[in-house]
Image (cartoon, rainbow, N blue to C red):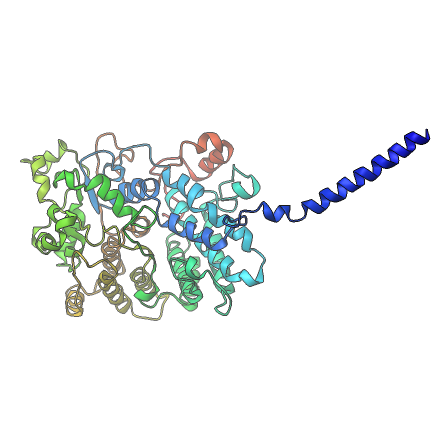
Length: 533
């Protein structure tokens, strides 16, 4: 018994000594096991940069299939003889849900982490406010494309495990977005830190983000003109009082550099890869639209050489030599929308595909360059909207003065594009002559609205911002576009009014999808969104 107790005591001592040794040896293990070259905590700046770049465009899914093939074509900026350019013929191709899925799975993903990491931290008030402004930018495009969509519960899958978010009504989303912009703009404090170099749009400038917030408020406020004029006026006037863009220096844009898919302009890369490769030798089935070219020529618009070229000018190695000739306005010709290689003979009886070489393409030395900027909102757009606000009596300035400022800003924006291949700029004299020849002088409100928004249409081609051109067209009806009626089209010969939800939503988020369809109307391309009255 004594021996047993003695042995037990000895064992306890040994276990204690071993435990002490192990505890002592464990000190520092945690630090030793950390790789000093690997981040173990989220880097907020990097997350924000990723969201900015991905939202500007990741390529095929959001930019090529949606912005270009649907909206670039339905707005008749471009035309295609094939059927894969859905907006050209309003022909089903199965890519209608791509932007929806990309926005929630890619554009919003890192941003939701930024919001969670900065929420309630006074020293990070600017980071949180700017992230909220960016969230509105991301989601306003989703709701404008599809109507009722997840908003209040959007992007919560990674943080809370909510993979089946409810759909909010667009009539509720717009007030939430406008209030979010107002709240975020009110919290911005130029005396506190921001994102610095991680902000690849405004380089950490808090005043610029405030200006962007109010300029977005102007865009969204004006969207309500046909559905709630009183609220539209209220928000437009709030935006103006808050301070919208005052010059091209305020443009919200992401600059691009040739080199890799993370830095180059994705619209240009996709077009060059698929629609305008040099191997086509000018006989590819995609060209600039007749509607666009005819309008530019009728106005004697000095932007035409900047926008368009014959195919030889898009041979990269020869651009410096070819573009001065191939951009001659008299040589430009647009392809009619809504035809294929056979039916186009209905409007061009002697048609052969060899004739494609004489039709215009987007200038890949300028607006379709791999180093062209992605513009998210321009000063020119702001001035066009202010012209309408003044026309409505909501702004004390002159509608004509804002109209002139918008066109002037658009034409001067050519200096933001690369000039190594085509050193083209529009002189102030040319701009003044254009304004003198095309004044805002319509005899009625409707005629002046048509003048303002036809110029809005022409200006937005520069930025490849077909999202906004299409939304503005649905709201105003300008320019006057005649929809194609290609056999088997999905709109019955009417204009495209929205995109259908992704097929995946009907199975993966079935209950919420069905509730949205029951509320909004059939999941069709001809079902208008709430503000489109």
